[in-house]
Image 1 (tube, rainbow, N blue to C red):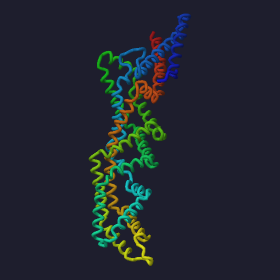
Image 2: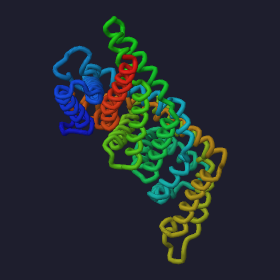
Image 3: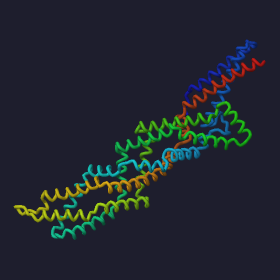
Image 4: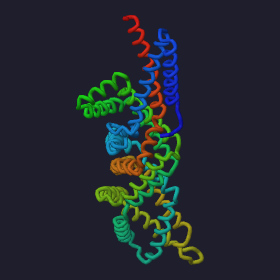
Length: 427
């Protein structure tokens, strides 16, 4: 917490000065009812301000060295961390919400755009051309197609799909579209908080905690006095938590360089790098890969392609050059590759099945990332010293805590005035 004087400190100082002035005036004017009233109000304001100062300070450290039920946040560090983890997992990133998010993305369109952007179709065409140049002696289209299909099938089986998908997902997170998607997720989280989705849970948690700590007679009396004097107001604390959550999430959404946003993105990337170690997820990707490969009917496509190539190769040019090196063959291969991509784009059934598989895979990845959020939060908070943790929490709710302390002076003075007037009327 900062050492500079804030408004609450100044208000407490003013109350103390007024108390001293009124006390001196009472010595010189002992019979003045106005002086007595001012002294009574100043005394009540000073007591209220000191009580609230003690209560607020006790959250972070030991006020005046008082050791009992003080320094609450540092002593309850583990409970604070666990509470943050549960709040994030149960309110913002539930399993149901993760699965719903996984069904919103057009993954197939993104993959096709990624393939076209990197000119993968040209690379495929070049490799096919090199391979067919070595097999010019074989003119059996069906046998060659079967052999090539087996080779491709083996290559597909031996190629792990998950690392490729991992790289694409990391590129997506680094892209503008990925940043926009993160903004959307944060916006939805803000809407949830604004709707009051966590208020009841926060209040219930505070009530349960206060009830747990109010077992003894002295504790019950202190808790009763604190509630009656509005020193401890569960509703105000819940509203403070809600306001601070909205503020923090809004900062993360608007400031793309925000520390917590960068930490979240870095941990997501780290989780993606660890995905290949997930055996169940790897099996799902391999099943997806083979389903896609089977749906493309590569054997028939290759047979038609080879027949077209054979026809072209049987037409020698006037100079006797090998036609495999000429432009028509390159165009044939490129055209067939583009036709395969076109089929993938326009085959609604195939595209729907692939999208379903990808949604399942992404949903599993999001659930895995949800579990990693606990690690992120724990690592960040446990890495803070006691002073850093106090400063982090205090800076987020500083204004509210200042007003709580100022309310102690204001409410104390008001109640003192009412009591004095009541006593005077009764007397």
